[in-house]
Every structure is written in C-alpha cells, then in structure tokens.
Image (cartoon, rainbow, N blue to C red; front, side):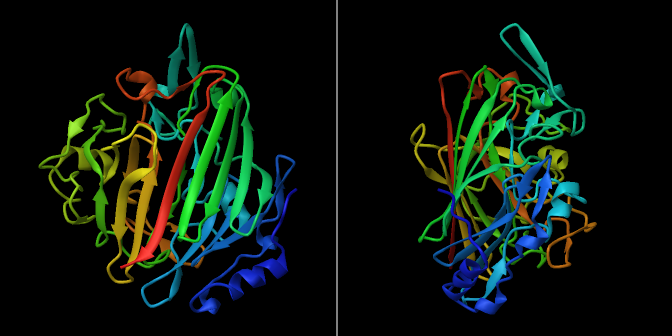
Length: 375
C-alpha cells in the first residue's frame, strides 16, 4: 500500500524536529506537482532523528536536506532548486541531487562493446558520455512504490535502447533516513540483456548551507591510497596511481583547499579535484568507511560508507555563480562537493578495473550511507 505525506504529516514532521523548527523550509507540493511524459511528479518529505529531507520523483532528486549545527541551528546542506520547472530545464546545472546512470561518470568516446555487439551513446561531455547520456536516470520520472515517514521506494525500468544503452534494466532504489541521522541509499537492478551498470547519487553538499560560502576550508579524509588518473577530458588512463606524496593523499586530514592549487597535472585536468579514489577496502562487499568531511565553523561532520570499490570526489570546480539556488543565492566556484560512491569510470575500456558488466540472472547491488553529526 502506498502512503503519502500530506499537509498534516508535514506539520508533524516539523513539530517533531529538534532545534529551531521555524528555520526549516518545506517546499509545497504545488511547486512540484506536474506531469512529465504523461507521468505524475511531486515532492515528498522524510524525517528521522535530526534530519529532514525532501525528494522529488523527477530524477529521484534530493531537493533539500536539513541538519543542525553544534548549536542546534538548521541549514539546508544540499544544492537544488525550489520548483520543478528548474529541474526539468536545469538552468546551469543538470545533476543537482539526482541519481545518475545507468553508467555514472564517463564512457570514453561514447561507445563500448559487449561480445560482438558495439553500442553507441550520446556525446554530452567533451566528446564523452557522462552519467548515462542525454536522458539517463536523472531526467526521467521514477515510480513512487511507497512512502513512509522515513523512507521512499522508487523504481524505474530503463528501456532497452534508451540513450543507446542495452537491456531492459529494472531498478529499485530506496532512500531511508535512520534514527542515527543517516541518509541511506540502496540500489538493486536486474537486466534482460548484458549491459554495464554503475549507478551513483549526485547530491552536492555544502555543510555551511546552500550558498553560504567556500568548501575549501572543510577538512577531508578519504580512505584511499590510490586514484585512477585522467586525461584532459577526465577519461582514465588505465593507471592505478599511488597517492603518496601527492595532493590526492587524504588518508590523514587536510583541508580541501590546502593543496588544490598545487602545480599538479591531475589538478589542472580537473580544475581541482574531480577524480576517482580507489578505496582501501578490507572486504569485497560490506559497508566500510570511505570518507569524511568536517566543516569547522558549524561543526557539521559528514561520513560516507559504501560497499563499492571507489568514490568520486568533486570539489565544485565548474560552478561559476551563474546558477541560482533555492534561496536566491548564487552557486559559486568551490562552494559544494559531491561524494559519489561507484565502480571506476570508463570500466568497459579497462579490463583490469573491477567489472561493471551485469548479465541476465545477476543482481546489481549498491549501498551508500551519508552519516551526519557534529564535532
């Protein structure tokens, strides 16, 4: 049975939220209710612990995510828009808060082969295919299978041939807020034809609050001793490089801005950090620590856990202030980060990378947990 949060439930969400309740802004359904491709779109509100989140089923996007600082003051710490029209027309930034795939990150030259069959995809990023192509998973309407106070189950059948991708890929994705102030993302996917699958979540975080200043003073830890270096269009070379002695070594805490302007070709290629870290894992498929970010002024502390082998860390290098967020503030250069748990980019062209091939009868399973606290 489907359960939907109406106006009364939204009032209960606010009443049960710790801290200064009048600081939390919930966008009304009227700003999101529409149809896209003949399918209904709306916005849904989740609450657990000290976290309040709104999600739209257009692109399965996180619209807002409210957490308290060390003094109990709430801020919305993800970037987004305040109405559905901006998400549909994406003025300035397409992927805010979305699920991306079926192949997150980049596919070189917009093509890959499986057996004797070659598939070609739209070139939507410097001659490459990025995050699934022109439509991907972020520009479609997801089915809302169920909604509870603290979780929403979304599904989508990515049809064979959409953006050239092979296979009818049936995806079920669950967003859950836990009493431990975690935002948990669970993916399960199955296909009827061999295809490459690498799905990820693409919220842009600013632990000061959307539009409230730089992330370069945030203190980062990444549990990784290697990265996969990229060329000038951010395609992996195939090398798996040791981070020791480089600006990419975050095994000990460093601020994001401490080395971001170093004379390093990889930083020049990404205009900062926009790279895949190979996580130092102890198990093949259990949840393990991937990264943490501490915003010292507010005390907000974000930890990332995943069962995936890698994580893309992006330091907001391509925002230029021309995009306006939910609260009328410009989204500026290096004022947000993305932490995308994943398999490696462009894996179909690198046989020694962990495989992304999904065959009929197999299941793609992926969990990512963002845990919020204060220090």
